[in-house]
Structure formats: structure tokens, C-alpha cells
Image (cartoon, rainbow over all chains, first blue to last red; front, side, top):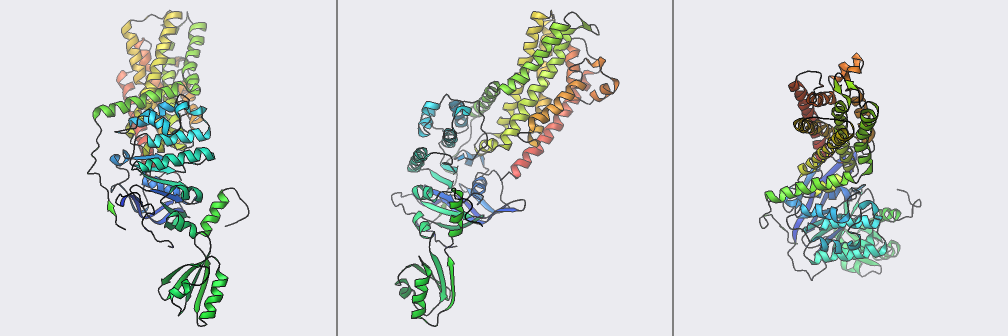
Length: 317
Length: 271
């Protein structure tokens, strides 16, 4: 684990940090495929948390567990302090999932009318249509909508029940830049109204623009959690680990060093480039031992992310 | 980092009976509208039995009789059974298989929809389409085939056939849980068409080869058609109770299978 979880960077919200949903030591396998391993993470009241990772990393699995659509193989899933399948919890949550096919002959307003009816205190249909930018499309049949418009209907169904907690699985997939920004604004507005949002994405940029906290997931493991700026700082650079008599403070002053941590007998240094720092270290402490240099932990995940975004074939892993 | 757990104690949410009833109604209403606007469904499910009836009951054999029963009257019972079976099987299995396989059912399950409302809506919709088919057959028969029955018999025939939608809806739910979204419609046809033939829904039962007649006795549409024919006085004179018992047993078996599928889905889902 690389990043440390810190207080939310937004200080304008003064809510206590309640955990509204959590995965605790969760493992989930589909047959021989391990989708999640030892995943721990919390969703806190009033925040937007982004689960960031490439396709197949386990994002959707995490959401489905939190929605109580399937049980974990090990560990515990909690929502509002209870079991996620609890019907009362479902009245307080909304979900946007990736769907292959939605009933195509129903109109936009009919879909919203039906889903709203499930909830005790739904939003007014007119507000739902406005929030999802569907006013002009209310009488269209689902089949007559473009990909981005369909996505907005699914968003409308997630929010129409006026839920306290929203799970959005890749909400902006297939949206153009303008529609994406509109949806970001809507998601921010929801949180301003006191709601909590967990969304998944494979765009670092999206997590950065929206989220209070980011959890990076790759191959079923959470490899980092923190604020977007903490995460970004870890996407580049090298980690140097060594046993040295130099004090942390002295190491911190070396050019190129961004972070120093003491770890048992060794110290761990984060630097943009390894070679200049190592040269300095060896010059100052000839007795230095146990030297290890690794790429910062997020690199692999982000390599996979960039591959997803269209640069196929150059990297293999 | 201070964490506390938010509990439900501050919000007590229990649905009133009225609210629950509204959900069931809306679910059924939209299921009906969805299928009504689905041309694949209405075209095959409504038009086939009506077309066959017009052709074989009104155009070709309008003056003939089968075993003493006027053909247009006889065929209302058999094409009625055929129509009910198609409307119910396609109405449940095709939609369920597609909803399950392509993720829509997960969206519904993640919502606070009462799960039973979803199944009820499918069954009610199947019954509504079944009733529509039977009433359309009545109308055609009375208007163009000289069908004359006491009002009470029309009512009994309608009630029998609409109740007969249940075993096939149950069968459709079972199929919907074990067929894929693309394989469901051909699978239904593979079961539905041979079963219809063997049960005497196309060729009157007495004209079927002996072997097929033997097979028919284990097929649910045979029993439903015999109940319907019994109303118009053309049944094979077997015990009505036996026919109902077979249909009830078949319904229970199918619901049992559907339940296994339902539980299997609750426990494990696709990636």
C-alpha cells in the first residue's frame, strides 16, 4: 500500500466522516478468475469517490457487491451499516449500471415514471428530466435515442428516487465532451445537495475533475487511495529504498526528492528520477546498502489505463 | 480519521400497502405497453392464431363439423389454446431471458422494486394478451363463422383459456432462467410448435396418429385444449379434474424450476 488516506481536501463541507458503505477484506472470484482480492475501502458521507482502474480491474464487481447483487466469497460488504440486500437500503440507493439492453419500446418518461414509483420520496419527473438533460426527449422511445442519450436515461433512473447514495458505473462512457461535462456538473450538484457518490471510471482526468478521493484498482486490488493530487503525484517517478545512516531530513533536501518515509530499518524515497538521487546518496553515504529501485506502484495500472484509451499494441503486459 | 456508522434508525421506511399496489400496477402496465409496442411479439403471438383461424375455420371449413361439432366453434377452443400458449411463453421467457442476459434485470434488482412485482407483471401481461386473442377469436367466429354459444359458455371458455395461461407463463419463467437472450425465442419455438401439433391444436386430435395421441396425454396444451373443447361439447370425455390436476402439477414443476434459476442468479452473477 502506497498512499495514506487523509482527510478530504475539500474543507467547505463540514459533515462528519460517516462511512456509508464499505468493503472489508473482500474477495470475489468468478470460477477460477479472481476479480477482487483483499479489497478494503470506504465510501464516506457526502463525498465523491472515484474507483479508477482499467477494464477488468474489478470496478464493476465492487459496485455489484455494494448493490447486493451478489455476495463476496470472503470479507464483508456493508451499506448504511447493514446488509446491502436490505430492502430499506435499496430505497436509499440509486444505481447506474452498464446495461446491454434496456426495454426499447418504452418512452423516456415511462421508464422514469416506473422507477420513481419504487421509491418512497422520488424527485418530481420534471426535475429528473431537467437534471439528466432529457426534457426534449421525454416522449421518445428508448430505441430512438443515441448512445449518449441512453446513458443519460440510465443516469435519470439512478437519481429519480432521490437516493442518499449513488453508485455510478462508468457514467460517462460513450458521452461526448460536452455531455460529459454536463454530467460532471450534475454529479457535483448531487453532492452539494448532501448525497454521496461512488463512481467508476478509467479516466484519471475524470477522477481528478470530480472526486474528493480516488481509489486506484488494478487486477482486483486497491493499489492506492488518496486525493486526486496525491494519486497524480504517484503516477510518475521512482521509488528508492535503501538502508542508510543519512537522516530523512537530509535526504529530503536532495534535489528531485518528492517524498521520504522511514520504513523499519530502511528509508523509502520517492523521486522524479532515480539516478541523480542515487548518485547523491552514494556520495554522501558510501556505506549505503540494500539499494532497490522500483517504478512507482501506479505505473502499471496507468499503463493499462492509457492502453484502454486507444493506444493499443505498444505495451504488452 | 474519525469514522462512525450511519444507521437506519433515523429513517424508517416501510411501504404502505397502497404504495406497493401502485408499484405492481405500474409494473404490469408498462410490461403490457412494452409488449404491445413490440412488433415481433404482437405480430407472431396475436396474428398467427387469428390467421390460422380465419383460414381453416372461416374460409375453408366454415360449414363442416368435427365429431358433430361445428368447425368454427371447435377451432376457437384449439386455436385459443394455441394463442394462449404462444402469448404466455413468449411474453415471459423471451423478455426474462433478455433482461437477465443483457443486464436490465440487474438494474431492476438494484432498485427497490419488489422482485415479485416483476414476475407478476409478466404473468398478468400474458393473461391480458391471452384474453385479447380469445375475444378476437370469439368476435371473428360470431361475425363470420356463425358461432352461436350461450353467453355462459363464452364466459367459461374465456375463463378456462385465460387460466390456462398460468402453466405456460410458469413454463416461460423456467425457460427464461435457463435460456440465453438470443437462444430463448428459437428454444420456445422448438418446444411450442411440436407441442401444439402433438396436442391436436392444428390437426384435430382424433385425426392424429395413435402414437402422437399417446404422446399428447403428457403434454399440457392437450389438457388445456380438452378443457376448452369440453366447454363447447367436443372434449374427449375424460375427467375435467384430471386435466386441471395435470395443468396444476405442471405449473408447480415449472415454478420450482424457475425458482432454482432465480436463486442461482441471486447467488452468482455474470462478470
